[in-house]
Image 1 (tube, rainbow, N blue to C red):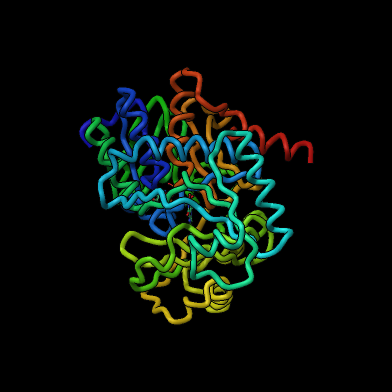
Image 2 (tube, rainbow, N blue to C red):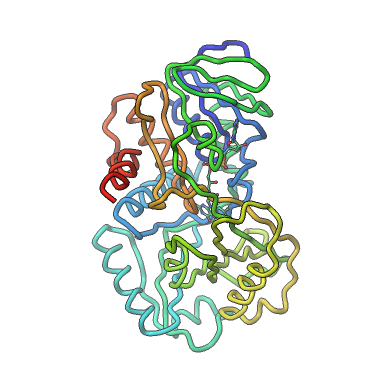
Length: 376
Ligand SMILES: Cc1cc2nc3c(=O)[nH]c(=O)nc-3n(C[C@H](O)[C@H](O)[C@H](O)COP(=O)(O)OP(=O)(O)OC[C@H]3O[C@@H](n4cnc5c(N)ncnc54)[C@H](O)[C@@H]3O)c2cc1C
């Protein structure tokens, strides 16, 4: 690195760190990014790339919707390898109870100006003819999208570099704080602001950050163009994603531009090894086949795992670290970091530069977790 003093050093070049670097650079700040591996190689490389509005909480809704709109605005600039496709999400209802959830979601989204379409069974089968018989309907959210996360991170990082950002890959950071970033090679960089965007490793750099690894499996098939047209998710997904204990699987299938299908999803706490877990994989694939029997005839070409960084309340940690004016967090995005990356970068950089953010940062500050713990 030519200079060793910057306005900002971002630690971590996943999608969140890349988005932050791009946003800081776009506002004229001198930025460096350090990653122990390479750009987009952590959870970002393992992700499905579903850009999705979610409504587990108002805070989750606000950041996912804000971010989804930012991705939409960026669409025209994204190179083809990012494979941005606004295919929409279909939330699939298997019974009347889940159909009631469709109507609840539709009402909430309508109140918040998110376009949706309630699908009866006939319309559901018209738009997704390969779903199993007997489903009762669904909810189409047409502004949701999919993209290829490692290329999206690379695009953001390239743009940051064009804006003057220095990128240092293959260099592990061992210590951050009080305006200093120390690397394993002994080099030290100083900066007015440091952003810890190290994903699941954030707590190693900032002890006290409460994060757990939540393992996930994904399968990609050979090419079957047109078999699936939207990102399909069972409504039971919300229950399994928000469970804070135990292993869970849910039907979650994505069409890729190549005609391949990405099949998820699984969630496991306490599984720290990267190896494919055959038991959970079998459960996940069976769940997908239960919703789409035609998947049984398809060939899988690759299976992989990755780790989500989960906070106790599943919301990310964005904002200052107490007791150190130089240190900021942008981490803990669990299963929504691809979606939330752009919104995270905007509100963090707004906060640091004294601008009023388009959505309030307060729900994502560390203080909300600490307060909960004090009152628990
Ligand atoms: C199976 C699976 C499916 C998913 N699907 C989706 C989805 O469809 N939609 C969605 O929105 N999200 C999804 N996610 C979540 C998403 O992948 C993450 O939330 C997101 O990638 C987090 O990005 P990040 O930049 O915070 O972390 P990462 O991508 O993990 O990046 C952190 C970076 O920090 C670097 N680093 C760590 N420690 C150090 C150190 N000491 N020194 C230097 N560098 C360091 C690492 O090398 C890494 O590059 C999924 C996750 C998984 C596992």
